Length: 148
Image 1 (cartoon, rainbow, N blue to C red):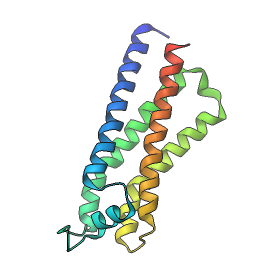
Image 2: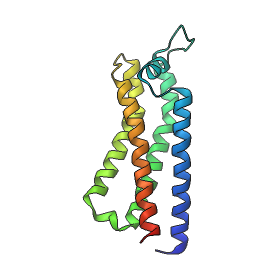
Image 3: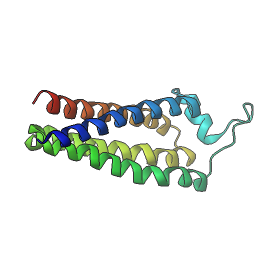
Image 4: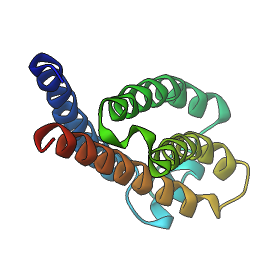
């Protein structure tokens, strides 16, 4: 692989790691990592003066996320094509799992405000799994570029 390609991919991986860090920090600040925090954020809590989210409000929040998750995932996972991992079945599984997790991440708020409180657990699980999959993909790309 050409050195300029390697360098630009490494930069993208570094910015991806910064994105993961900022996503973690924002989620912790806005929502929190406990079931009750997720429920309070979406369904509201009068005692804590937290207003309930509406379908329109959630739609305004997730519309940019749908585009960004798709584009970010496509670009990051596309870099796996430049590695020796491109023909492995595990790479295809990683691609599917990443996009399914991203879909769950943006869809669960609608389920929570529809009365399915169990989806608060799925929201937390999909958030962490999505970040873990991004970190794992970044590691695979970095390892294959540096040690290949």
